[in-house]
Image (cartoon, rainbow, N blue to C red; front, side, top):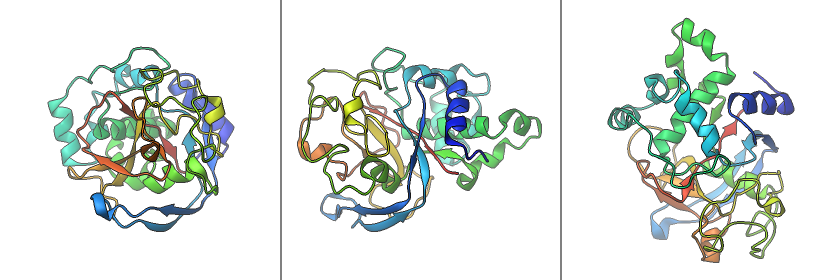
Length: 272
């Protein structure tokens, strides 16, 4: 498995396209707030191992690589992590168009199922996919433990947003329009490199605003299970969210994995 982050970033960027970089996140404590009063779980304190997270949300151009690859979106192997994902793919043979055009804008109208399949495809690409296909081993991607790339858990996402800072937002305790795209100030998603002043302590950008981001973690359930239609955590707010509380890095929401929204996308995590 690749352990040199800079080399891994270059290889991943070649599979996708610029801009792409992996940011290392040192493992540590994450405090998840109690959301029992609106359908979530009770939260608590968690420990995360070290991992890497994508510096930016996945862009339109990067997702298009998945769509254009003859062994990409159309390959059922990337959807075989659950029977519900298989059915989703059968019912959606063509991907929904993004809500906002532009190669470097975050991809929107992506369901949780779609984002998971993208991670499975990218995992296989980074793990000598062509050899695996020749050997008939693509079904190994069914086992989440074999994925080097997947969606971040809620704890991993929040750890990347704050690391050890006791802040409300990735840069501090005050909302700053120069740091993120939120509150309909712009009125649509923006280029993923537009807000360098809003980078988190690990270097990740757009962790507040621009688009909500899917997480691996189910909403209101403690155990991670990739099957079923259980709602999934979304984090970070979006370009059209104004309420400061909903933009906090610790805030918590869930959405249907079938949701394909004009204000939601995803970023990937890499596990060494």
